[in-house]
Image (cartoon, rainbow, N blue to C red; front, side, top):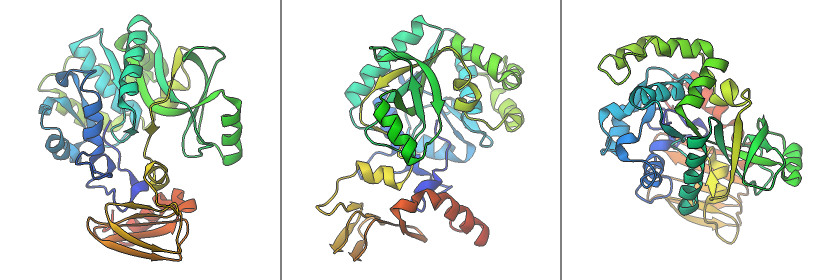
Length: 349
């Protein structure tokens, strides 16, 4: 899934080139390319599908030239993850109705890729043998308020039935989740077979399933694009979590720990980055810190930032925009972007 705009990483992430197409760490590979790389040993290249917005077609083809144009599924408008996944499921079903599927966001960071591959293999083995919906849950390491949580049933194995999904909690609730040992971070990575997810769409999102059924004979043909362009905008705007996962009774979670982050905001990037002795992080720029601590500084390549008497701030500059805000207030960045769009007629999006 590669269609998001990543507004919480503004001003680095912009509408024309959102975060999944950026090289945050100076490795020479973007988040999308890193996601593709880690699946190389799991999925043949010809079986990879990228679902993205129409405006990002050229970016995807540029960054993943090994894919054919038919492997890039283009959404004419954003409708959240349920329609995105429904599109991919119907394309896959037209080719192989017995397929086993992994759904992965394109903008996550995985530090231990060996363990990641082993975990995915375990999950694929489970969904091949069971008509169940499987999600990966990350062992929490801190009382994080920026992630959704999964409550798992009692047991002594890494694969358990899901009791409940919980949205992003406040700090006190997050601390209780961590102390209980019953909760995992919701990674947004899903595994299932075609039968199980197709049945789930028909039961919990029947109107959406019916819309895609209207094109059951056009998927993987030259009529597919026209059908999607006409039908897709009328799909309900809903996430797969709200639409199916929180309602279904056959949902399981595989507990995992492979150094995961959804890189949802500047603070998650700060947590993962190398820090100096005063807790400062510098990304893709040169810095000189004076009496400053716990900051994250991100400027255009090669620029110098001189930071004096600043504690706990985000300073990020890219293109024609500069952001300076407290790290504690970074959840408001999306609002800042919306305000700038209105005030300056989209000039800085």
